[in-house]
Image 1 (cartoon, rainbow, N blue to C red):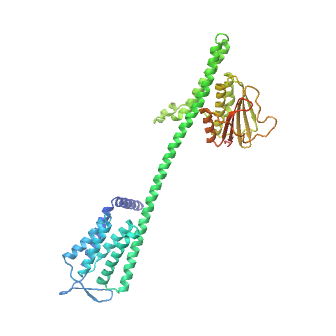
Image 2: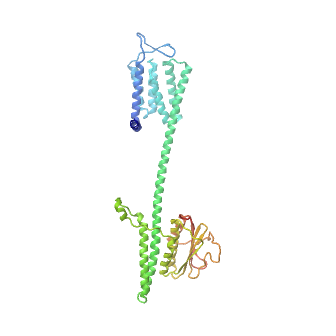
Image 3: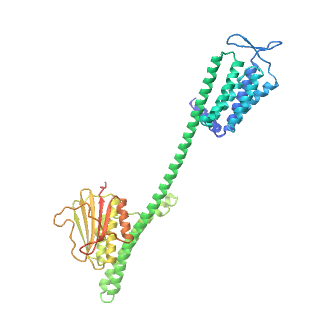
Length: 434
């Protein structure tokens, strides 16, 4: 029994969807049903010999009507058939339907459901047009219905007027509400489409942003390791014959930098490589993905830089805490890019990398001046949260570092120091990781 009910509901919904997809077919069905009801109504009226009469059941009075003729049937068929075209041209169909009803009533034919045709067409007009444009049609239907009620139905004038006003008013209200609902649905559809386009645009922006981030990562990795390789290559060429041990050490550093660069590039580009649909081959095809570098790998970075000939010191102040991977990577890349710039633009200078954990913020300071560099916490002073205005730097490296800091809600200042050298200060909200 339950299965039969489910199937019946499914069939009903299928029929509803089919009718909604073909509104002209619905209009044809309504026109055929209206014609069938009108003909059935006509067949129920009794006729007497001689002059024919139809008896009113309301007050038992005898109201004369002419017998139905071919013209009466034609008007009945025409009024019903007009309903099949009410969606295409509602205003002309309304005028034609009202004219046929007026002619039908004027020829004293027996009452049928013919007067309901103009009312249904008027409802269709009310669902399409605003009230000011519907008012003429409402007045026309009012006159037709009032004339039909007074002539074909035994009713008092006041009762006929009230009936006509009530029927037309209810029809108009329902039609107008249907129109407003359709307009609201159309606006919602437009807004939905706009939201969909906005979401697609944001998705494209996210993809573009991710590509930019990957490009920045590649820039940092390649620039740093190539700087190390360049310095070590020059050193190895210089001491190749005079100091083979130093030359060999330089070549070893070059090899380590090359392998490190390749590992990081594979890690970043793994997300761009298409994965085959074959699940069995997926594990063998996908390269191993190492975690993103962070401050934990900072000592190894400094060792590689020292091997390249740059004297660099590391100091840590405050109580270290774990950072989210994004913040951790940002700090690491800023140190890496800054030290790369020192090797490129200030050969022979010394550098200081200072990490300060202050409250929930992390301050990363990289300084080079060729001599002793004063720490932020030297002398027991309080670490400031704002290091003052910085001189605008140049080059894509500084732009990339500032963009990194902005992404994670931090600030980056870079510029020459009054005492000489260059300083990069990153202030980053230290959102602790889990």
